[in-house]
Image: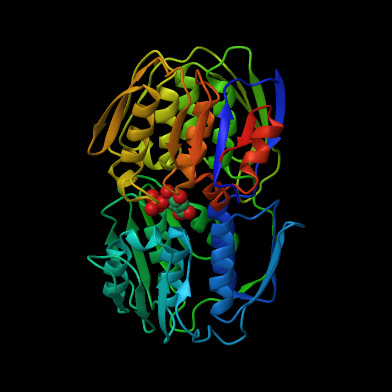
Length: 443
Ligand code: S3P
């Protein structure tokens, strides 16, 4: 894993075709939800990031037989035939908030005593948001860290249905409750403040689970104590839209550059970044893959233009939550003031992403104003003309956003702690190189 990289500005190919590893959100859900299946689930995809690997290991600690062939790009999960098993020791989810929050929902369905833990970053993330609904459903949940931080100790079983209004738009919290609701007697209703990604709902719908999604309400009738049992199958998740967004942004702000990203997920609750890029003036076209797959997918073509600033807030935010650091980076290349509001959630991601982007952009010479819930970025910026050293703070999305911005800079940019891109996009630096970016090892 590379510790520091140096990006040399410029980009030397006129037309490129790229593809990205399988969608991390979908793969993690499939790994976790394969625990409900009879027989062996197979998930195919090119390369799994370390969040997927942490989740696979955790599923293994709960009794599943997990075989992961990283190079061949497939993972197989055979769950224990009788529920989950009591793990020996704490179950570590590494850096994965999705893994910890979703697995908490599943574990709450079983009469086990399970403690979930994670790396330094995950141990700083708020878990009160899952503890509250799970407690209301009847699970005993103890947050063993300071305030509402992990480790999360869950003693589950015998769950009740609830009606729950989510205080924040969070697909992780929604999914945690949905997975626990499968073990309740009766109907659970969840109300979202704004639509968030619906990968969990789509998997359940494909299994024929009676789940009703109407506007911001989702209702699900549980299977009771024994939980559900579905037939295992083979899944081929599309490429991760959030990883593809970095590749699209490589071209978006430079007239004359263009790129195709193939086989990428196009779930409408993930793709607001495409609308934002178009709104900024880039030429974006989508070639949807035919077929009624459970998750829409296709190819995206982006042709660079001189960008103009954009403002995003409200219901836009959950639909591009992971692309917001990248949007802040692009804002520094666009004419005008790019403004992001209603995105306080960024403060409790893998790092405080508002502070991290604010610091990095200022170091590059960009005029930014941080808000509690977002940022104003003034563009087009005059970047510093000497080498700048930036730090990802171990956050994969910060590392990749800065790498893309560095291709537009005036001088080389060194990114410290760059290896964290493996969390969601294994092979990211090689992918950049194959797109024509000069990436050097630094230090
Ligand atoms: C995810 C949901 C989002 C996102 C995260 C993955 C998921 O988090 O930021 O990277 O897989 O459900 P929230 O739902 O907490 O906003």
